[in-house]
Length: 64
Image 1 (cartoon, rainbow, N blue to C red):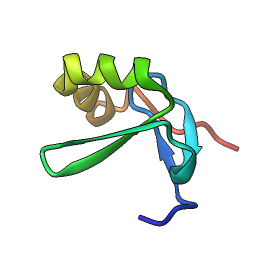
Image 2: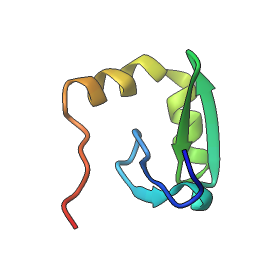
Image 3: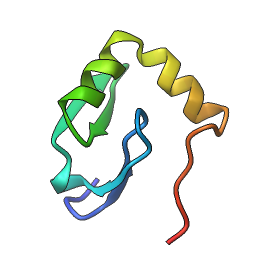
């Protein structure tokens, strides 16, 4: 993943460029990106909840 790739914060749904992410976290060999420490902490408390939301399509990319 490059520094200018778009990524999605699975907690709040914010889209950002990878180099603008305020926090990252590796879980099950996958790197997740977050807009801030609050979203990171919420994810760390229950990562499967947010991964499941992504799988079910309950968190989506906004059309730009």
